[in-house]
Image 1 (tube, rainbow, N blue to C red):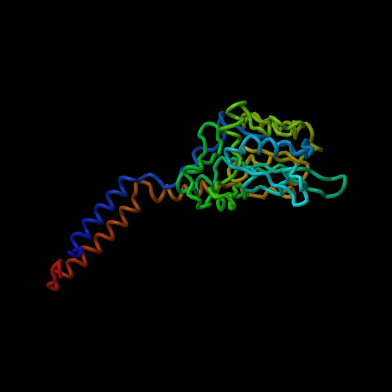
Image 2 (tube, rainbow, N blue to C red):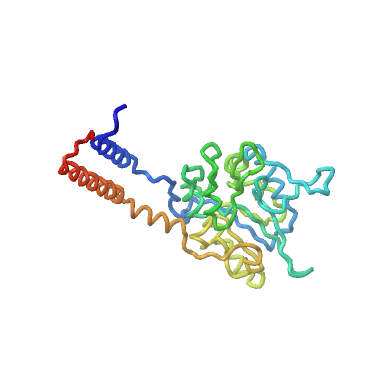
Length: 305
């Protein structure tokens, strides 16, 4: 069998570099523009109106059961398996209502689900574009057919939202997508918003809901913490919150306004702008190879030696 010569090696390097130049698109999907546009849709959850009935949880699971291959989570004491009782977000639960309690008279419910960040870390981290952000609606969605199960989206999410179905033969990432392919498509709004009997979950354009949230704070300053959670956290989100308690007490993390996803994309796009860095790398490697080749020739060694 003929061995690979230095000339063959240099040819192979040149072809590889050309292929890289032809495929200059970034591996990960861009998170796109921030969700400040007039077309971005959003959800406003008012914790002061929530009565903790969990009808939103039941509706979410019923509507998205088949699409996400979800299962009911029964308590060990529920021998008749009558009640779905998840304790947290999981591979079977996209939306959960929790209770924060300071005393018998001071407590609040809080809804946890995907924040639909305007600069989503999950989209930026996904190497195969299984996580995408709709440039018009701002909905952050998941494509199970593209997912390779790396779970980078879980690590990149600052809210710890995406969950993996460890117990399923064909596992998926599970997270809210505003019922993009189910209730939103059929009825124009997510199932949780449609079902809530207390009006705690409003759905509509982000700009309208943000204005509504600030108006509620202005008209009821004693009822709310003077802040709309999700307005600015890590670049902003399309899931907004109003509450009577500090958001950190409700399990919502305190985050900076800067988006790590936007920062990493800026670095990536700067380094790879015009594909200068890879070209420089391959140029350096080629120069080293040519120098070594010349040295070998000066010593009297041929390519097939």
